[in-house]
Amino acid sequence: MERRRAEPHPERLLPQLRTRLRGRRRVDRSRPSVREGAHVTLTAIWLLPLVGGALVAFLPPRLAKWFGALVALVAMAIAAFVAFSFAAGYHGYQFTERLAWIPQLSIFYRLGVDGISLWLVVLNAFLTVIAILATPVTARTGGFVGLMLAMSAGLAGVFMATDLVLFYVFWEAMLIPAYFLLWIYGEGPRPGWAALKFVLYTLAGSLLMLVGVIGEYIVTGRQTFDLSKLPGLAPSPSVQFGLFLLFAIAFAIKTPLFPFHSWLPDAYNAAPIPMLITFAGVMGKAGAYGFLRVAVPLFPQPVDWWDWRWVIPVLAVAAIIWGALMALVQNDMKLLVSYSSISHMGFIVLGIFAFNIQGQQGAVLQMVNHGIIIGALFLIVGWIAAVTGVRDRSAMAGLALRMPVMAGVFAVVTFAALGLPGL
Image (tube, rainbow, N blue to C red; front, side, top):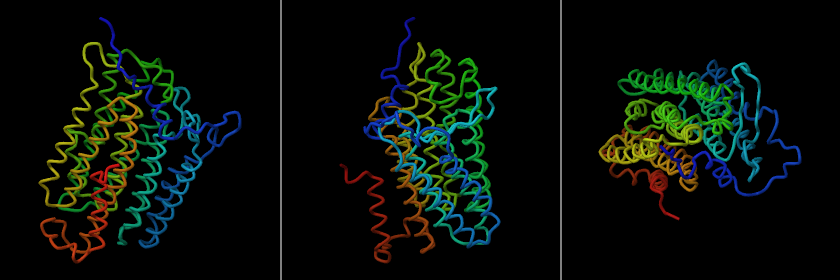
């Protein structure tokens, strides 16, 4: 049977996407550049919050908050430096770091950013600062801020890792503080159940991803885990399909896509507002980023007897419709925003699996847009709940007369979520 090829070829889209996102200014590669070689700029972006988080946990509450905010601000400044120093039109990763880790297994500590990951690194750093500044000072502030910084460190690592094993390590690292944040600092009647449900779903996905990582290493001849080289070592289409499923389920759980989404309402309802700013604003993007960085480039071809490319778009459309319908029937504003987030993430995944440069470019843009918008919505909902003591929208009638400024801000953010005015 003649083997079919996916057109356009997904692995060829990433270089085009990087160029579109970074502009077209050419770089003279004959000169030495800070964008290549061994340095620790990117390491500082994740290591500083991790070390700072460990120190913050032992500080008095008020000092812990402001010291944590300072650490997050410094990490954001480094991320901003990387963004402003970024060379448009430069093909490949910049600010690369490479260190032998387990060379016998071809595992290296590799970091780098390109036009796809750069904006997510900046988004993560920015929202972490906002989340810590929004954290109220209580007796348990030190531990909360410390875990928030640890989660931010893991997320930054996911977006910067260019080695598949390192990507998996950071993926696991971001889940651990998220679990403890839900379990220890969760709100509502059953935060423990929400934390357990979250960790069971994510661990199931992580185990499948681990099997996929090992399988990819075996079928490619144990050559490399370098994400920039693996697309050129793609196995047969039928093997690609099996490996794709392992990674896709893990990423679908984290995004989340229907029907892997049922952990999200409980987790978002239990999570305190400062946690939700990064939990919803950044962590969901890790799943979509995994599709764009790993699943699509590494496994681009359909099998001979079944084209799998329509499966994920169908799930994305289901997430769009289901999330919107569930949001319409919610009275709790926190749950309403949570379900709307599921719907918006469906649009992002749909863009990725359009398999064209416009769709994937739009997906990256929407990841950043959604991160800022959903973080702002949760911040507003939390502020209103703190002032009025209610989150039920039926009890908020006439609130605009009492809080006109907040009503105006809420209207602007809501229009942004709707994509209005359209340009």
